[in-house]
Image (cartoon, rainbow, N blue to C red; front, side, top):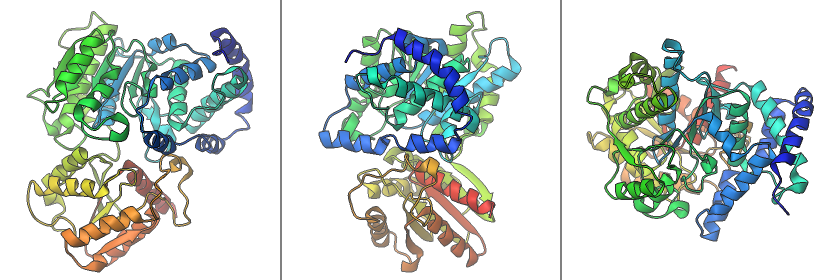
Length: 511
């Protein structure tokens, strides 16, 4: 069947806007989440690709172009968004958050040169899917999400009969398309887009003429899809480089840089390696951890490139403007090296989920040991359900911690699943992101982690626990608190686990 024509899609667009605006009055946010969760989850798609033993190919781009056409847009329309495109293994979400925060401060202090409307698209979310699509530094409201969701849902249904692929896009692709629909409808003129997986074949890579592109720190992750070496992964990530924008990156492991440079040259641009300025210190940025300095430096350079491309008359040294540093200091990015006290417990939340990022988290936690080492109970809550070797991940975390001292950091360890509540359900907005296609027995991962801990970090056996749900893990934490004068809890290994903990704590606060 021939690909849907732009003229036909425009016809449906004009028709559906009126009908969708009426129909969304009867449709709720909960309806939208139910529809969203009916789509093929990322986990199922990744499992299918692993089983086939193939790396994603151009078919994904062909399908995304058709979906975009079906909702009424051409790829050239995305150029109106002035895209900042960010790929990488570690830190790409934090880099996006820094960038958005800097733009927000520029809006306050220099409204003439600032973007009028800042969009940001990231993944995954912690509490609500609305977090993925932000306008001017804030998640879209449930009302805005619902309105645009059903506009797009209806357009896809109305154009299915003329489409090569009549099915709706999978979960992540749908949200990518939705972000673009929201941004184009709301007049966004600076869109910060985080790549999902890889870069070359990622659904976000329909962007033809970004203003700025950047690859953050690289490591081994999603090797079944992206390759087993840093060089192969670098090739995939650098697929976002385009001739319309300089190719930025940070300091990388040696084998990555030649590949990034080659890919930049192939795309008709040049590679620029960004180092943190000497005068930029960890105390000057709002996200903890020395590893955030390279993310902050990339964000500074991306903003600098953006401003000079969109406002050529801007001073050459704008990167030194106080608004830039205010943006770095005032950034908000929950679940990343986040420490706070809740209900009398000192918590540390970090969603690190690769060996390199967990090692960095461990080192950061060790640098903060004075804040928690005297706690009578120090509890680790850990899970990583989707990686092949979760034991390697927890070993990396402890390696990072012990690089700055050999004291035993934890008195208790709880290995949890990502299932939110004990009735075996997820919070509806966490259902798809936590979908598990693992065919191993229930609690296999948790039992493997507990067994390794008993053998390698000896302590009382009743201090090592397995929690079938996040809710039960939190009950274990509060039972430990009841027996202790003061308690410190570190939640790490997965952003999905971190998000589940936030949801359970939020629910408890209202009971």
